[in-house]
Image (cartoon, rainbow, N blue to C red; front, side, top):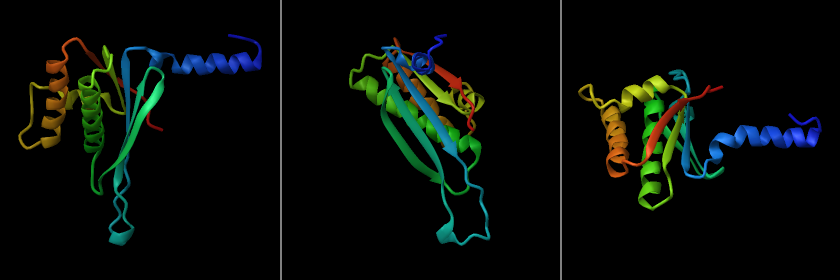
Length: 156
C-alpha cells in the first residue's frame, strides 16, 4: 500500500472497483427498500416499497432503475422483482450484441435468488418464481457461452 495519501486514495479506489472492471463481465447490483405497513397512516400518505438496479459494464455504470414494488410485500418479492429486472436487462444487452462472457448478479439474499432460479421445484401459483426461472433459462438457452454468477452483499 502506498504511503502517500494521494496515491493511497487512488489505490483504494482501484482496489474497490477492480472486480467490476472486467472487460467482458456485466455486473448487476440489485437492492430493495421495504417500507413497514402501518394501517394508521392515511392511504394517500402510504409509500410503496421499491427495488433498485444498477448495471455496470467495463467499470462504469451504464443504467440505473428504481421501481415501485407494492405496499404490502415481503423480502422474497423485493429480491425476486429486482432479480427479474436484472435478468431481463442482461438478456437485452446480450441480444444487442454486447461482448459479455459473464453476468454477475449481486443481491441482498443469495438464498432467495437460488430458490427462485431453481427450475426443479416450482410451487404452484408462484408467478414471480416462474418468471425469474424463465428469465434465467432464457439467458442460459439463448447464450450458453455466458456464465451467470450470483453473489451476496450486505444491505445496510
